[in-house]
Length: 287
Image (cartoon, rainbow, N blue to C red; front, top):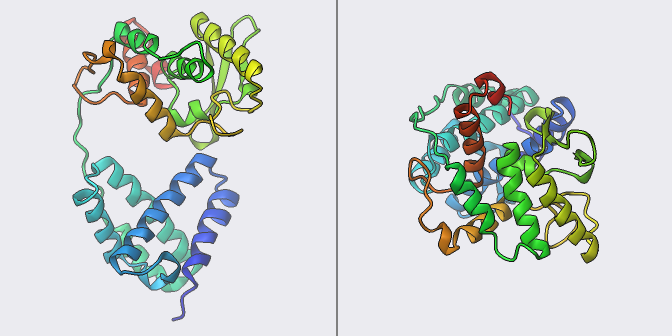
């Protein structure tokens, strides 16, 4: 049986299925695309060819298993990352089989691949004092980038925003003049939630916006990229946080589990502090 081209299957999955049928969020589409790119890059490198030369014949369960071994053994990815990649590939194979019956057998074999059990570990978080120490350690906080980084960290902790949510905040999502200042966060599955802003965060945002106006920054995103009109990227947020953590005052700061401090640690820290202060667990889960 003649199979469709690999490019047409990818195009159908990303553009027709994800974008038009499922109306998946932009970040979801991007994450799925990055996973497929990593899968096909692995196959191309293994077979000493380029992605453009791959055909639909490479869509086999054996290749998926080889890719999963590569993630675990060479990339040293944990079960969570492996399972996320597997979920994307299962979806891609299923949709491709619906588009081309010749792929049904391989799609069924991929569907049968089991997820790895992830160890249940203790959540890593920071103390309230350590969170404030890190925020106050932002270098050059009176400059445009320093003020942006202060807002970035205050947002991550003050709202419990995921990294993708924080980077995607637009100026139009902010209400700084209402009775209760707030921000609209755009989360997974195109869901939104409105989070009230603390006075210290509102003050930090206003200082940053004043510097933006002085510097002529016109980006529609709150956390504007230093290189253009777009938003700061997730990788840039990680790099800027790592820069802050190099400050001598941060050298002795560790999470409760000794795990590395990441941008997501601020979300865990807020949730833990809210629960410790007596907030309802169900309400915290809605963050």
